[in-house]
Length: 82
Image (cartoon, rainbow, N blue to C red; front, side):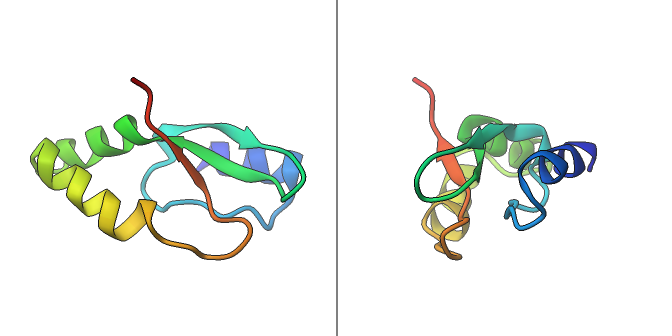
């Protein structure tokens, strides 16, 4: 939870976070639209694998429940590194 407080202190308390994935936060995107929390998608999948999902199940879950969700202009950004 420390990373959330640190980012909120620096960028404002109105940042939106993906619950359960603080270890996958890689920073905050800044620009014209607003400050948005940025996540490493592979680390998010690894978190779900550690909780018992297969890698395929984890990606399917994230694609359906997280990556495609829009919760306003502060919606987090998810990056897949190749």
